[in-house]
Image (cartoon, rainbow, N blue to C red; front, side, top):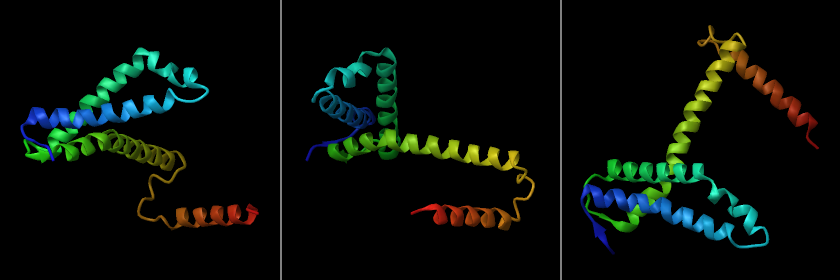
Length: 135
């Protein structure tokens, strides 16, 4: 196994994970009957800017999580592959929390955080209604 050490090598090891994933996506999109329609997104400059940003994020996440190494290249590659998914999960979770807070305050439940029994009863009532409608 190839071992890499040094912050720059670890950065590029992680960044190469995104390149591998995007190359696999392009290969899958360019096959089949509607290949021209599927590969249309690759002609957009916004896509390439986003890809460059993901490559930087993967490199930074790998460098921050591993440090200077030494680490096996395949491990750095795996961290780089998972980095965009981790960042997406973090962003989605923070957005989901923000939406939940907004919906609670708009529904008038913002001031009764200590008593959530009414919310759980409403959820169970909704769940029962949905189960009754399922066939």
